Amino acid sequence: MKLLHALDEFYYEQILKNLREMNQNKVYGNLTYNSLLYLEIILYNKNCTASFLADTLHVARSAVTVKVNELVSKGIVTKTPSSTDKRVSYLNVSPEIADDYKQLDQPLNQAIAEIEERFSETEIASFIEMLGIIRKHHQ
Image (cartoon, rainbow, N blue to C red; front, top):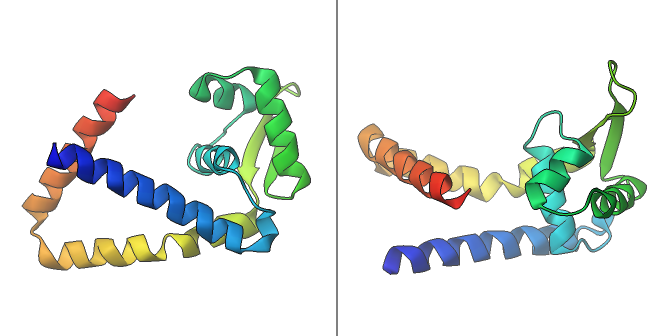
């Protein structure tokens, strides 16, 4: 159970850290965890649509539309109409917010650099494989 506790603690700390850092920056207008979740999904999924968000989060499309419109009105998310299907709009995190995310990832990048210094490629590959197992069972 030590591994489970460590993973839970890591996830909890990461989410709270991101939420606190984003809410310290008044550009975001005090984001909720729900808004942060939407941002993360949009940021890390190319050609993200409202339908994709609804399917991923298992929520009604209308609820996603309300949240996306809120994020668009705050200037955090942009909508780009599809060139082939005008009924579809692709969602993107605004460039300024994407740049901020890169800054928020700086401590994680430092941790990765330290891991790469301290552990062998084989150990890192094992860790990556372990994370893959967790992802597979967590979907």
